[in-house]
Image 1 (cartoon, rainbow, N blue to C red):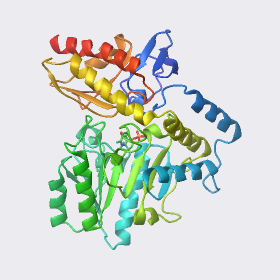
Image 2 (cartoon, rainbow, N blue to C red):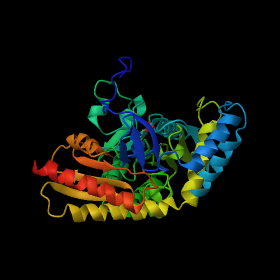
Image 3 (tube, helix red, strand yellow):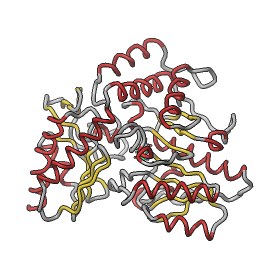
Length: 393
Ligand SMILES: *Cc1c(COP(=O)(O)O)cnc(C)c1O
């Protein structure tokens, strides 16, 4: 391994050379079942033939031109995202943190436009919004922030899934401009509100009453992962702002900040930008991803496979001491144990299974949306005995 890479990741000692569907091959020729999908990025699995074809064609035509010009692929993807979300306008960037940066800037500008000079945004405990200065400040995890103080100000933190805490802030503050929340917290441990519909609808109501923007970070939960295009579509509401990235480009970097109504009219030329954002290659990848998800019925598959994996895990791990809960929203699956369990990642590697542990005690599965029933069962057959062994050992 190179001595010239900054020490930002604790990497597993494995190199993959190619993949197909839910499977990856190492340089030693060993075949792994991918239950992580590049952390919710490779929704179409690896080397999806339709995606490969689109990208090959696009690369040969045009990769980048600059947002100084009209970009047809970007315009079409913008239309498509507006249609699927019921929202109005899209700003394209290259990652999740950038999409959230755009949302945070948008909310502040929205506040200033209303004469609020010191706008504040309500954010959640255990939230994850990225690693740039503003987004790590919005993130609710001290480890992400430690060593990078002074943090960016203007955030008020409340517990996740606590509508009352948000309502109380409305009573004592008049400079709030937005609420930023993940419909399902990913990095925080696959935390699903106890009544997600009531929570988001409650937040919508508070925001409407006070002229705040409801901003949903769907960087992990969006693009079919929970069984709908966006997690908010399990409820009756539409947010003012939604951020996307991870699954949108199937691995080609593309992020999006989507807005509706007054939020969609907030930015004007000069207020925000991105050199690469929405370039022809990235937006062709986004467009192909959305088309393939629709054609191959991958939202339906995500819902069915999420249920299958979760039910099978519950059966296989029934009565095992040390399991706190097994929970999921589509193919965002969390198995919470009563103790730290990062060791399981290595144990799974030995069984040729790629998983992740987040929030120390939660085994996180984010399989590709294309996973089939046989692969889903194989996943459970490999994972359940490992968890048992770990808890009993
Ligand atoms: C991964 C993630 C981000 C950050 O995305 P990057 O592309 O790594 O900047 C932001 N929000 C959520 C919910 C995420 O899961």
